[in-house]
Amino acid sequence: MAASLGILVRSCDHLDKLIRLTKAARKKRIDVTIFLTHLGTLLIQDPKFPELEDLAEITVCRVAFESHGMTPADVDRDESLFATQAKHADMIYECDRYVVF
Image 1 (cartoon, rainbow, N blue to C red):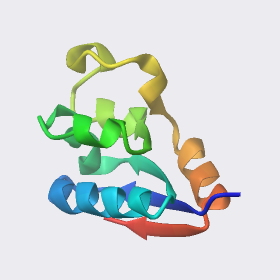
Image 2: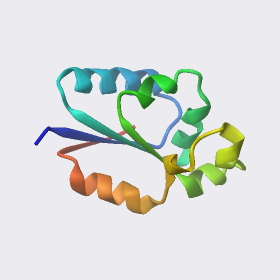
Image 3: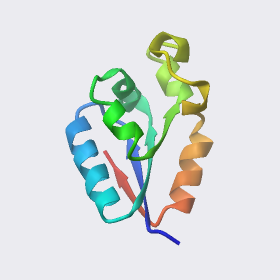
Image 4: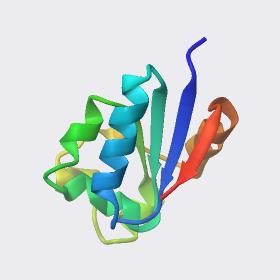
């Protein structure tokens, strides 16, 4: 079984650090799972966000995202990207290590 890292992102201030951490983990063959919540959900609008999509399994908290007045259709994203906090709980349970941004 491969090592795994779960990353909770609740801020929109650290996308560059998130990308660097994810790339470093993948370089060491660590599976990365990212859950975006609160202000972190706004990162899917950042032009750099697609860099993460090939590096990690990413999920966005639908309730937090919609609390900013947006819907998945507004950002032209697949519905499967959005989930509830239950997905966050699963990530915590399944990952070897857990980091919060």
